[in-house]
Amino acid sequence: MSWFRTNINRRRVAALCLGAGVLISVLGGCGYRPLYASGARGGVASDLAAIKIGLIPNRTGQQLRNILLDRMNPRGEPSQPRYKLEIAILPSRQELGVRKDDTSSRANFILDGKYRLLDTSNGRTLFEAETRRVASYNISDDDFSTISAAAAARRRVARELADEIVIRVSVYLNRRRAPKPQKSSEN
Image (cartoon, rainbow, N blue to C red; front, top):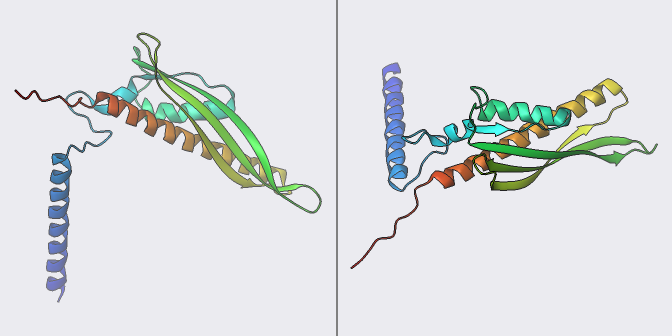
C-alpha cells in the first residue's frame, strides 16, 4: 500500500513539474518577462541598484530611507548613480474612537508621500507619483503600550510606502527598458 501512495505522489510531482514547464514556455512565447529578471542588459534589479536615494527628514523618513536602501541598493549605494530618487513625506495622526470621557481610544498614523525619479545626467524628472498609507493603533491607558503601538504603526506605514515605491519605480524602469515595437515596412 505504501508503494502505491509513493507512486501516486511521484506522478503528482511529475505532473506539476510538467504543467509548470508548459506554463513557463507559454508565458515566454507571449512576451512575458519577470520584472526582476536579469538578462543581457542587466534587468531592472541593476537599474534599481543605480539609484541614489536622497535623505528624508525625521525619524519616519530615516526608517523609510533605510528600507529603500535595503530593497534597492542591497550591495551599497552606487558610486556613480544613473538616477536619483527624491522623497518628501508628511506624517500625521488622526484620533478616532472617542470615549465617554472625551479621550481617544484609537488613532491612525497617516503617511503622505511624494517621490520623483531624476536622471542624474541632466536633472530631468523621469517619473513622479504620490501615495498615502494609513496604519491604525490602539490608545490605551498605559503610556508605554500606546507609544509602542504608535511606533509599530509608523514602521508599518514606512515599510508599506517603501514597497509601493520600489514596485512603481521598478515598473517604470521595466517599461523604459522594454524594446520598442518596430514598424514593419510593407512594399
